[in-house]
Amino acid sequence: MNEIFPHFDVQQAIDAYLGAVSGAVRARSDAYDEGEALWGIVAFFVSLAVTVGLYQTGFFRRVRDGAEKRLPRWAAVFPFFAVYSLATAIITFPLDVWTGHFREVKFGNSTQSFGAWFGEYLMSMGIGLVIGGILVTLLYLVIRALKRTWWLWGAGLMTAMMALMMLLGPVFISPLFNDYTPMEQGALKQDILTLAQAAGVPADDVYVYDRSRQTNTISANVSGIFGTTRISLGDTLIKDATPAEVRAVMAHEIGHYVLNHVYEMLLAMAVIIALGFAFVNGMFGVVARWGGERWGVGDIGDVGGMPLLFALFSVFMFFMTPVTNTMIRTNETEADAYGLALAREPDGFAAVSMKLGAYRKLDPGPVERFVFHDHPTGRDRVTMSMDFKGAELAAGATDIDPAMAPLVPEVERYVAEREAAHQEKAGE
Image (tube, rainbow, N blue to C red):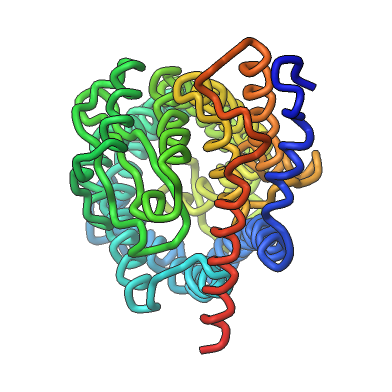
């Protein structure tokens, strides 16, 4: 209980915000989140099964032999990667279309027609083929030149590519999928720029992108590195959040930049990729021999072993999921704390966290949280927000609303509108 504001009870405020997301919306959010984890596991095993199946048919061996018959060995990597990627994409397309489109429509998150979704799917695949083909070609040059230490230098190559994509993504990739326009002049834009300037973010404008083209969910980010840093927020955030909520979200995103989370994650992923490649290096020969003559895979530099290399790496990353999720979740928690201190909008952050709870499970169990969640839960975030509010009020803060949970009606409005929209869509 707060001595200066005795009517403010932290636990009561937490319960009030959590209680604003209830009924059918809460049940659907839980089901959606649990399904995301389940379908992710299904996709992993389907991918492995497709790889083994195509090896068993001799498909990869024939593609390898045909490519190397017509091209120099180094040049055969790109076409093999392209055929391998397209073949697996065609086989797994029914699963992709379910998880990527129809399931999102079912749960009321997607705003796209199938045609629009498919167009973006094809564009993503095309970008992946070009960038992935170049990267894999370079990786095989490293593997063949540095057979004993390729896993270490290969990890460096992958990390460098991730950094390059972070540099170029906001400028060249993201605009292919969404239109980015300067935010209209006004008090809210000035508030965001003031927060950014106070935190030392080198941005002189704020951009809005048409997120509503794909989804009705809310999001924002500070993307890019070096000279391409950009503050962006989805039009759905402006539409569905109050100014206090927008300030809270943008302060959180600014926190990622100030706390150097991009560079921390790059370094951490470099270590994880190196460990993953070391695992692949150790297991490749064992599994290739198990495949026998039917697979026809030679040493790890054999391009015909590419699907096996990727499969082994995916196995490593699958079991590393709790580790990578914990790393990301830790950074997100740090950004939450920074954002609260910067924007001083505890109710705004609590309210927007509850709105995210309309499609993210608010209160998963500890094991579920540890294994599958890469962000703090809704309960985590509202608890941090109200603890911050209680502490600030106790310290005599005069810039924080002392009311118990003033934005609960705003959350209830948002939840009611989502449920009405879902029922209308279901009745069509």
